[in-house]
Length: 362
Image (cartoon, rainbow, N blue to C red; front, side, top):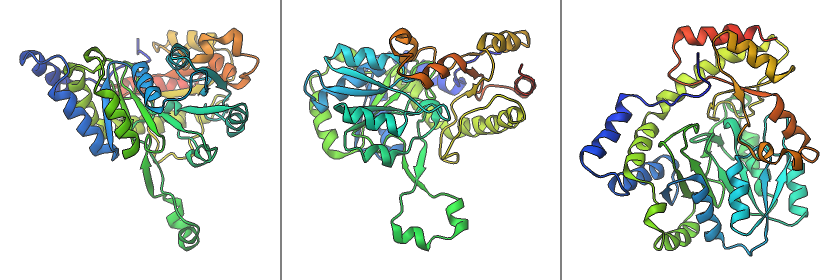
């Protein structure tokens, strides 16, 4: 059976972890520091901290922002469930936004509605590696925390002035220049490194402060952080190697994505619209079904392929009864969006098997 998820851990990654064990340096230490430096080098952020979970990363971000208790925080209905649990745990009120069925991202209309309702902060989940219209989100005037757990190291298109746009040829426009990395637009960003995230440390997250002002505040807060909140060196060692291997892994994912997209294009099912395809990270292969999930799952299983609901651990899944009537599109995607295996460890034979199934889905 080809599993839906599989880590990209190879011998090189395991050697890094084993080295920590042999050196008896498994708690927070040098490898944690090395991971932070790697993140800074790749993203250009001002500072970052590596923690034991994404929910802890959000807690520290909320501490640094110091919003009044009971403040309204905007969340995507398709965001991971830990977001709403953490928001409520820390004394804030969640306001859950519906999404577009085209790409699984919160709609601008929903964000505008949330801001008018009194939203003081938005946690922007870049689901399935699809990038949002970040400039329009920022233009609403409230702070943004980006969750880049599935869009790590994506590039947004380069921002150009009106004069530059007029002087740019059609050919140059077609090949969009790279702008900032995902995670560099918010006041903070969370790079989850859990088992099913695009980069895994075996568990944990990096909280990134893109700008100096936010980093100064976060750095001061971290001076009193509990040692048990900090990512251990074994996890940091694994994450560090995965980041260094990211380009190679992403190339494999992109090749598979192209093949899978062609396979499904002639049928009645579809995958997401990716407006910034060149810069966005490939996270698995979501298929929005035009038929029941259960039937498609049974069909794929007979062919030796496991598929799962793409948003089985989302806010809408946790609070479906409460949110289904308000977040209609998100509820539809919860029921109809299936995740097919797509990861670098897939061999040629396995990829061909998935292609055949995608081309013949009922």
